[in-house]
Length: 563
Ligand SMILES: OC[C@H]1O[C@@](CO)(OC[C@@]2(O[C@H]3O[C@H](CO)[C@@H](O)[C@H](O)[C@H]3O)O[C@H](CO)[C@@H](O)[C@@H]2O)[C@@H](O)[C@@H]1O
Image (cartoon, rainbow, N blue to C red; front, side, top):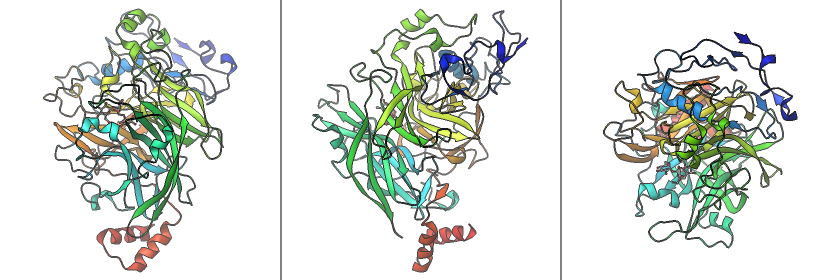
């Protein structure tokens, strides 16, 4: 039986709470199914999803767009997240709608190169404009990364409380095949002057502070002023590293200027750091509500559907007391009569109420981007996952993708999935987002046991599964290129840029491009600019005039002459 959109309950359309709603209507197609419960195959928006035997059907998400200022928050439900396992296990998910390999990052070799032997680096991002185009500056590609000192006496896992934002640069326009194996990034040093970022905390007493992720905007594409949006972290710790109070997290901004000559790139400014946002306890959980709260990782952008406004997405948690048993049937997201649905009380008593991530939204209220106002979250993952980190907005073919990274360890009881990048698609910044890839959300995960016929779970046992944590902090770049950093491969710790991979993105489906690089693995740290600032041509003229004839400069010159 088919029902038209007139018959669909008012989850969509202009009548819903008087909200302005964007986009097209949906159709539900009912079909016969297993086990005699209300049978259906969904044909919402574009993706048809058939339930996997033994698993629930995913939640119906219309992809319907709402105004960014609306109160609608989409849900990544338990019914959705259970699709990760349902559709990953080749023993279960055979045939259509399964994803045994299409969302798995290829194996990184254990002999990977360090990006720089003198620094550990992890979360990495690029110099972008308001639409996430990646700019070179005067012929140099520039990246920013969280870094720590491998020789300072702390462990790789304790690096977070010592994190400083650093920058790296390399000549633009040279193909990955002509670069050194480690990508050829030159370490530029810490981005901010020593002692500058702690000023955000004013007179608050701290034992130490750190700089966490992370995005950098070239404010005018024909200028050199940049704004760094980052998370200032303040800690009060005992000598053995225990927090005596919840860390203070302040989403902050500092402005500076980029400079470059024929030999190097450098920055000035960044002396004044402005705190922009701290959680409000209404939409976004505070440290008082939960000492393990997450509030960080700002990413700013302009939305073509709402010209003149600058928005920010960030990582948050649903406000309220830690562990409060207030997940709802909608957070679980099961269809009526689904035999594989869970009981709400059982879920809440499992400890899942400690996992309540969200992706937050804020809007700037001044032209200098120093005043911001919270808007309701875009997505919540109540009773599903505790951390939706480093969110980004990615617009392609008129579709709005929200990508976010998450860990296996932060999924709620009863849900399993790999460390990796998860994604959601809608028709606007605020949408009823459909989790990518058959409702699961998984866009690109680390290799797991589920990729082998013998596998049955995401067991990170290093013997069976030495690459379960091979890479993390994936960032999706123009043209579907995805960069990340190496965490652990066969027990070897990384702190280096991972090989770039490429995903094909088409509506609600993503698939790794195995024709990219060698069997899907491109160059280590292949993070190319897709735009070049206006001085680029002049810079290259100077370069040619200077007679500098290193192989890199010759490659650059020949590349430019082809443009
Ligand atoms: O360094 C803080 C920034 O890093 C992010 C994203 O990578 O948060 C990561 C997080 O740590 C986990 O991920 C690590 C891999 O990067 C892993 O090595 C570690 O074992 C994990 O705990 O850092 C905090 C503090 O540990 C934790 O809550 C996160 O999951 C990003 O969100 C931060 O800005």
